[in-house]
Image (cartoon, rainbow, N blue to C red; front, top):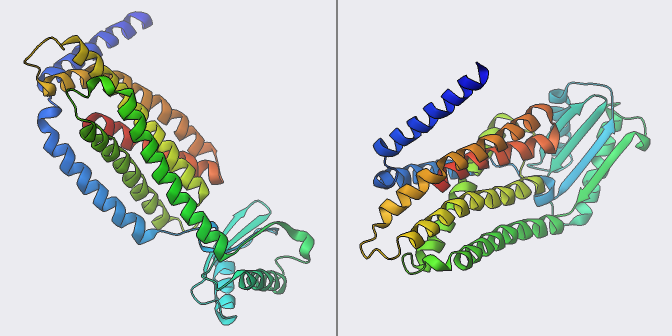
Amino acid sequence: MGIKSLCSLRVLLSLSMKKMNKKFHIIKRSFIWIVLAGGLSIASLFLFFLNAQFSEEFTGGVNISVISTPTSTATVQSKLKNFLEDQGYKGANVFINQEADTLSLKINADLENDSKVAELSQDVKQFLTSENLITSSEDIVNQAIIGPSVGSYMKTTAIQALIVGIILMVIYMLVAFKEIRKEIPPTILAAVVIAVIVFDILFTLGAYGTWMMFNATIQVDTVFIIAILTVIAYGINDVIIIFDRIRENLIRVSKDKNIILGRVFEESLWQTMRRSIGTSFSTLLVLIAMFIFGTGVLQQFSFTVGIGVIAATFSSIFL
């Protein structure tokens, strides 16, 4: 009975997909998808920059992990912030996280030079000792000191990585689909690829910004940049699948002088619909498991890529 039920379900899904194909036209509603994508992109930009919190990797600062008994992180955070202001570190951002017997502190501040970062590190150690959070330097498990020059370099490198990644993807698409240049000019093809990539990035930024709004420990760091590059690659993979089917269908009807591109695109989208959604859904299942059972950077990475997968599925089909 189980096998028969599965077979019946598969037949029903196939029939419903065919009915949707006949009733629901994606291409004819292209204006709706473009307006929706534009609205989501603007809202996402607003959410990200309104709540953006950059880690010490981009701003400069101190990252210290110490062995300490469980304590109230909110109290320690408030005391440390007041202590730093009294020491002259105006506008310093303090992020504290407690896991088992390890207390992690991240302090971001706009400092003049690398020597000021070293002073900040010493002041933080002084605070930890005075509050009896550590008894000696041996209680320090990990310590990273990042000066403003390194932070500036990290920002520049991250931006360059994103730009180069987008350019390489566009070049690949232009070369890989040279057979359809007669019907689709290279400028249009490049514009489509860039639009898809930009939407995937912006939508992911918006979701991440919303997460930062509700969780002060979440920050923009190198793990986030790696996740964004992964989202770009995944989104282009979806686009390649659809464009590959468009290429096959255009070659099949190439002898027809009255080719209607909209009809070819619509047919290609529905032919690849099940594969696109199925691939995204199976990927999301893994990422959800990583998010639920993972911690720290693993959870951060899985969340970012998971949102990117959702954005890529929408953009590859509807944009």
